[in-house]
Length: 311
Image (cartoon, rainbow, N blue to C red; front, side):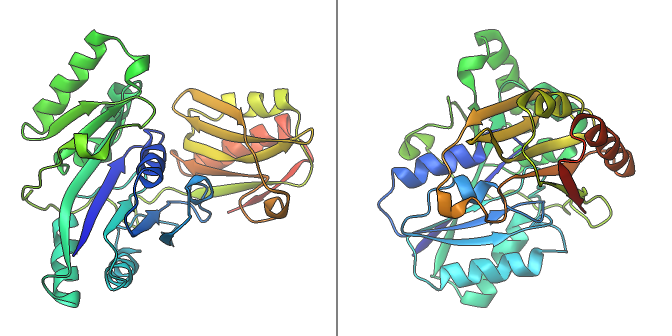
């Protein structure tokens, strides 16, 4: 019987890092359904794919009406493969409040006895939890509808900060299990995931509040200083910016979330360099038209003649 797990967590919390660690340490037949809000998935590039069956659903949330049918179809396809386990990685803005409804529909389609829903694992960003909780309803919804919370980036917060986060999580969901982790690493058995029914709610993910995804495609290499200047000016207008950029023959993985900017060396095989997703930045807007206008003006100033924009 196939075990299904849902992994949630806000943008940049460490969902993909956690999933990578799990896949690297599992010898089971595994399937992954990965959800991205944007048109292009950067996370699938970084996930280890050997002997893992993948389905990607992009340009929306799997809990929104815009993708829910495809979400259930994808799960049905994976379940019918007879896998040992399936991991669903929700997008960072996903509100999984009606996951129980999805499980119910899937059961009616494939029948009882083919899978079990093991529960929801929520990854919390220990560094930015307070800020994210204050401004995004999906963060609280993810905790309410989870069975175990992993507080990631434990190494970057104090004991006092950790206690405050634990207390807040307990206030939101008194029943949930909580474990602090570092760099997304934990022995899966140590999570001690215990499923219990959580009453479903209508998800807040709708077509009306769907963020706009914008792609910056680089036709010429930027200077590192110019790229950094551009990213610094973007944090107030975008939930997240990420991608893979080549500068002076070296590839870099670029990631902006909240005020945190990471630009780190990244190995890219020569045969992959021209594929979609490389030399591109995926930008997820937080202020609608204002975000788009700000991006266009800032890119013209910091990255003139180096790019094209795809909406």
